[in-house]
Amino acid sequence: YEAKRRHGGVCAYDPSLDTGDTSRLTLQSELRQGIERGELVVFYQPKIDVATRRPCGAEALVRWQHPTRGLLGPDAFIPLAEESGLIDMVTADVLDQALAQLGRWTELGHQLPVSVNVPARSLTDEAFPETIVAALARHGVPPKLLTLEMTESAVVTDMERAGEVLRRLREHGVHISIDDFGTGYSSIAHLRDMPPHELKIDRSFVMKMCENSRDETIVRAVVDLAKNLRLRVVAEGVENEDALRALGDLGCDEAQGYHISRPLPAAELTAWLGRSEMAITAG
Ligand code: C2E
Ligand code: MG
Ligand code: MG
Ligand code: MG
Image (cartoon, rainbow, N blue to C red; front, side, top):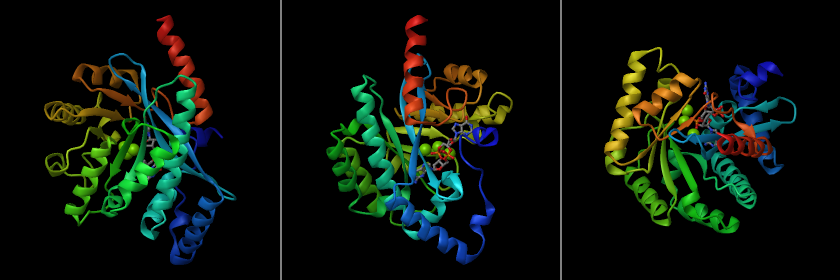
């Protein structure tokens, strides 16, 4: 249990899941079934406003409660879902659960915007904005309370269509974030051609920013870039108080990481929100 705890409550990546076509196909059909049976579970990791330290949002992070393999983290099945086209079902399920949860938090008096992860290739689906808008309407959630965190795990070839889909999402009032900024295929050109509302600095730059001056320089540069472009900037992977303070000095808006809280089941995050409000009132 402790070993699981250290990995944010999920099993570490199991390389046996990646061997051979047979087990991949097995896992693929298990995933389809699993989604239909409601085996996807959403954990939530809070974000805080760096200046006030108040909770200012939560990121929905999917896990798969596999019938025999235990609780699997996204790295164990998201790449497979992306290859097999099941990713749209995953996105729809996570979105649905996250918006329902947002509604419950609202009823409890917590105004908590929620972020959902979406692979950039979904932007080549022209029906995507309508899917999002329909889900918001179904749950009665104002669009501005939803942020879509775009991750690029592959090159998006049809940039023109992606730009159009993003533009329509923005028009509807949904917020757009570029996740893992500075890694993978995410490009500075997007900031010019498809401006987001928010940049999320990849955790690989943030985790050791107080020990590694190159990391700190990169974080500073991204914060400055975001500020100059009038974008909000979020640091993920904040693992200690030094990093949180340093981010405050650099003017970073929001922080997320193990130092603040690990990703938690919804009920545990509700309790965490209650405690953090008491701490703020007391302080
Ligand atoms: P991400 O969107 O960049 O999410 C942040 C990841 O960093 C999460 O891993 C979180 O548990 C981890 N993390 C948070 N704080 C810290 C910290 O202080 N230190 C360290 N070392 N790690 C921290 P997780 O939950 O395993 O998710 C991994 C990735 O899987 C996510 O990266 C995201 O790209 C993807 N993912 C998660 N949920 C979904 C989903 O519903 N749909 C899609 N398409 N992808 C998802
Ligand atoms: Mg994310
Ligand atoms: Mg990220
Ligand atoms: Mg990341």
